[in-house]
Image (cartoon, rainbow, N blue to C red; front, side, top):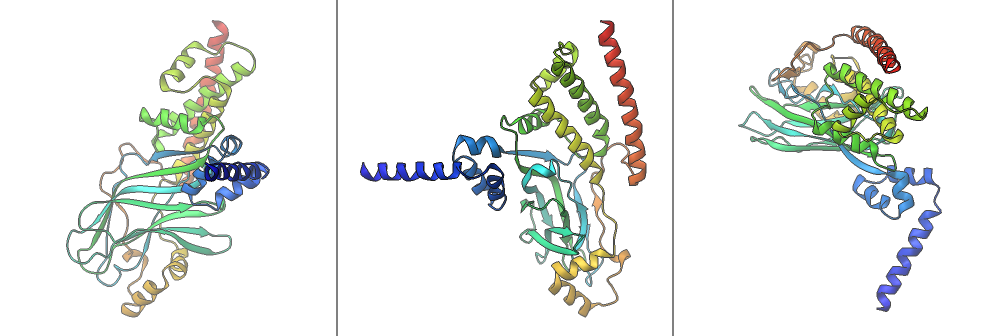
Amino acid sequence: TPQQQTATMEQQQQELSLQRVPAELQKRIANFLQYRDAFRFSQVNRQIQDYLGMSKIRVPYGKGTNFKWAAGGPANGNLPCRSITIPLVMKNRVHTVVLHGMYHDQGWGNNHGKLYVVASQFADGRHTVVAESPPAKHRESPLALEFNTVDDDVTYSLWYKVGGGEGHTLSLSNLSMELILFDEPSFYISKNFHALDSRQALSLQPQFQFHFMLLQKAARVLLEQIEQGEHPDINMTSFMESTGIDMNPKSLLALDQITSSMMETSLAEQEEEFSLEDDEIRRQCFPLLSEQDEEEAPDVVLPQLIPRMMEVEPPQGELLGDDDDALDVLAGMERDMEDMEAMIRRAMQDD
């Protein structure tokens, strides 16, 4: 019909005009769209789809990520408190983060418990709430905190408010991150993430460090062999293929990026200690709640009375402690892996 022909011509003209938009500008446009609209934008034509390569991955926090917070008393239960820094995997590629989980309050009384995501630019001293949950219900309910990550120099943290009153609590379980990111044209980032996740080989827990380091070294050895025209080691090739990792340079480069990012971000999976910056964050992000709390009990808000995070199911194994200790452990692991890589090369030369 004439109307359909007109609509088709208009769509073709729009696609043609978008093809003239520089590739880098296409990414900037997508960054300022909600991720659902950004997905639609990436499907306009093949050229934009190949450049943006938008995909979804889910990163589990791992075992032991069930939290329960309790108010220190009726005076400070309405005071928002910081819990953990949110570790962003593949940070330079992420468009949007959605935190998933299940949460509920104490199961009786008023519904005051809430969860927040705060974006902090510490260099400029600016803090903003970028996501806020509905009040927690008495029964377990799904949680979805969604926020855009346009700025690379921003730190994101999870905050909570238990609610005033004796006996009030807030519980969060099965925490995971869904990342909407700019993938490679062949979607190898998301493909390899899904392959590792399907074999329960993804976690932000520090004890997975050696696992990711071994994968990274194997990927780099295989990539070097392929680039030099050699036959990839048959044992490592068999292992990669059984894991669901394609044996080609783009796939191995994507695996290298994934393992590097997972090793960098898992160290952030630690409870944050109280800091003097928290008061400034509260002043900027929760002014009404802070003023109300100061009026009711100006001398109560002290570090030792701030509700702390308690792990209901602590992760198995010994977690890394201070950052210096963690870095020392990683440095030792790095040396071990270099020795292992050298042994692999010598064994392959002997064969």
